[in-house]
Structure formats: C-alpha cells, structure tokens
Amino acid sequence: MSKQKFKSLGKNYLGENIIYDEIENNNSYDEMASMLMKEIHENALSVSQGKNILKELYEIYDEGNLQFEKYASCSKGCGHCCCLYIDCTAIEAELIREYVQANFSQEQTSILKAKIDDIAPLIPSRQDIDENNEHALYYLNKKIPCIFLSEEKACSIYPVRPFNCRKFLTITSPNECIEGKHVVKLNPSINNVGLLSINSLSESVTRFKRASTPKGLPLWFKNGFEEINRAME
Image 1 (cartoon, rainbow, N blue to C red):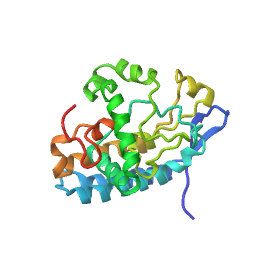
Image 2 (cartoon, rainbow, N blue to C red):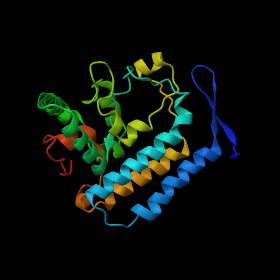
Image 3 (cartoon, helix red, strand yellow):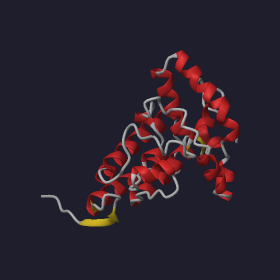
Image 4 (cartoon, rainbow, N blue to C red):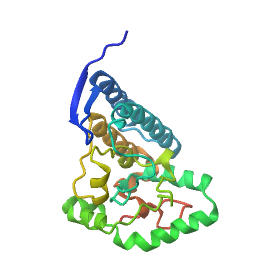
C-alpha cells in the first residue's frame, strides 16, 4: 500500500478544508524536475521534440493538479477569469497553432485573426508587466475575453491551453470572481517547477532561441496561424 501524507492549504469559499497528499504532490514535482534535468536543460531540441516533451509535462502536471481542482470554484461555462493577461512560451504557442490548424475551419481562423487585430494594441508587453503590474490590471479591467473563449464560455483550445491557464485555480466564490477584485488562487509547489520546466523547454528548442521570452498569448498569432510570430514585442 502506497504511503500518504496529508496536509492542508487552508479553506475554500465553501469552508472546505483543502486537503492534499504531499507525497503525491512531491512525486509529480520530482517527475517534472527529472524531465527538466535529463531531457530539457542545456539540450538542443527540435520543434517536434519540444512539443512531445511539452505534452508530457502537461500530462504530469494535470494529473498532479487533480487533487487540488476539486476544491476550486472554476468550472466550464464560467469564463470570468478568461479576460486576464495571459502569456505563454513559443513552444506552447506552436502547439496551439498546430491545434488550430488541425481543428478550426478557415472561417473560424479568420474570426480569430480579426479578434487579434482588434485587441493587439491593448496587450501590454512582458517587459511592461514585469516593470509595473498596473499594465496587467488595466488590461483586466477592459474585460476583453480571450480570443479562444467560445460563445458558450468554454475554452476552444482546452487540450493545448497554456500552462498559465492550467495553473489558474481560484478558491474564491463565483460572485467575487465576476467582480475580479479579490481572487484567491491555489499555488502548490508543482506550479513553480512546471513553469520553470516549460520556460526552459522553450529556450532549449533551437528554432525558438531568439523568441525565448514569453509574451501575451494573442501576440504569437498576430500574423495568422501559418507560423507563430517570433518577433520581439
């Protein structure tokens, strides 16, 4: 019988104790850390290798995050937090681009491109975000929905959504999420190693060496979905 060691992260908006198995959490952490050291760090990877490793990291993370998800107020059809500033790495953008090309019609991609053209001037650069978080709050207050949020308030690229979307779990009440003024997020240790691993992975893909800095999600597709936009923003 496997060992278990339960800990608490406090309570959610329903007053439920957020209980998790620290050993299970550590196993997920160690698995991602091992991939970082053995398969990613200082390796020269092809785009294909990078996408395969990214899918593995997502799978490990999602499985490890299951024990936290049950305490979150997030649910399909909510979408209140899908107007946040979200950035991602080049390898994540490439995986999304490939998914859109395979699953969206020409009409759908044209609609996405029109949305990108409309909001691109409003999206702050990563440097702006790093220097002053007010830029992120300004964008949030505009209440601009993610370009991939469907009319049913569901993520249309859910299987390949970026890591920053995957790790956004709020334990705030849905009513407070609507206002967006006081959102409390869960932040288990697997979030940190996941983010580090994916950032390092994108830097290790030879083709994306010059596009290693994460940027606002829509900006990767400023030129459409034939190829990601690797220009500095």
